[in-house]
Length: 103
Picture 1 (cartoon, one colour):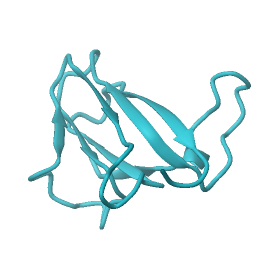
Picture 2 (cartoon, rainbow, N blue to C red; picture 1 turned 180 degrees about the vertical axis):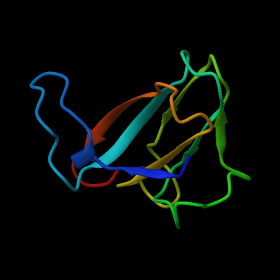
Picture 3 (spheres, one colour; picture 1 turned 30 degrees about the vertical axis):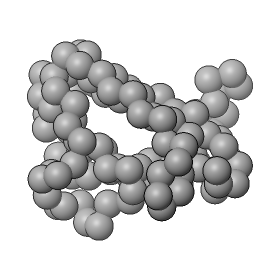
């Protein structure tokens, strides 16, 4: 599959069901691939293009999950992350914590 970008505006508030506001940064991210049959790849930045390579990116194997706190990154907490699934039909859950401003 292609890389897909995710921002706060493309996620849903679990307490209200509404879309989150745009422009808030990711404070942490959890990728749940426990139901997957193929690997999922994570970039802590926006994709360069849909066909970006997966070399040197974070790999979450099938049946696994991954959690990363994003405080203290040299470039700051990202506004956008990107995900690429190996198997299009796999269900992958993306759970995030968002903050206004940068920390």
